[in-house]
Image 1 (cartoon, rainbow, N blue to C red):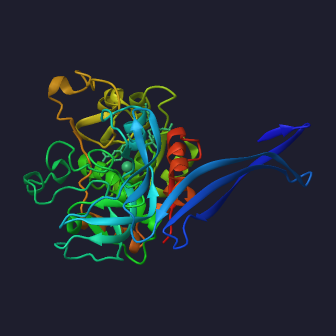
Image 2: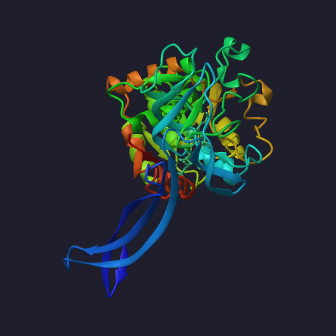
Length: 426
Ligand code: NDP
Ligand code: ZN
């Protein structure tokens, strides 16, 4: 709300994007696409039935150079170094015999991108295209790929393991090739925020996008659903369990939904953003507490009559989060952590409440597994109407050039944000 001349106005931001193609040669081999955004803030006041234009400014979004017949370069939004991002031009990825090259249909930034760039959580990276959540159309496939062809609409998980590795055969595909090495996008190679992106082991890592699943829903299946649900698997939720979900951003919200599907009884959520609390109720949350209003363990013990919870899923907070959760957990309780601990050196565990080492309180922290079968199974929950990921999507952008805006929104985390999606179209 804004006050002006003793009246209260509601602010409605309006964005208009202008795209002006400039053809540099007569065969249209080189086209410069200039994109501008006009931003108008309209202040409305229904009582006085008039509005004011509060501000008008334009922002040059990007200049995209396109070449006909698959020119060799592409644009991407990248981490330039720790704390710095920007648009870069790079060579298009090459397709190996088992791989695929995908042209994105929809993309979404992740809190993990924020840890990676602004906390330097993975160490420094230079000119690495960001992003690991997206879906698209197959542009190119390797000669050994069996189940996908050019033009297929596909979903892709954020974690893309090498399925023939020993780790994958051992049941830990996310660590194929070394700890966390199944996480390749925007870690060991360019991510999905490019005009094209590369997927290794395409038969294992792609899944056909069902008719009933839209591109923006498919984006939620890249990471939010499989990660949130992995928290549920790690915490081993059983029928009737009382569950604590620490953090109800999009990942924690999918843990709430997953715990509900697994038959949890009470689901106690930690988080304060109103939009997240509203969505959590839709996914099955029964109680809310705030980490800003006293200690989590005391609030949980009060809610549960001193008993504590059977299971806990950690999808928010920092290295200090485990202390109160151990205190709030019953003996033999299990904690599934999917939170990416972006800073700090040690996780502390309270000795006495951990049963002096003998309380059978288990903590498992895990990166989600990825893979086509998992994607297909999770998509089937959307297809039959048992999971509605649309409650996660609060902000939508149209056009590849808005990847930057979506990422900055994720960094700022306004109160009404859960997840932004950038729709790119055909
Ligand atoms: P968000 O930042 O959107 O949500 C974090 C949640 O944690 C919010 O509900 C926030 O509350 C809450 N929170 C913040 N501080 C505390 C605290 N001290 N104690 C308890 N709760 C707190 O994150 P996302 O849902 O997008 O992601 C969650 C985590 O999962 C991130 O660290 C992300 O990097 C990680 N991740 C892990 C993956 C994996 O494979 N393991 C994959 C993808 C993401 P509030 O409402 O007040 O903001
Ligand atoms: Zn992610």
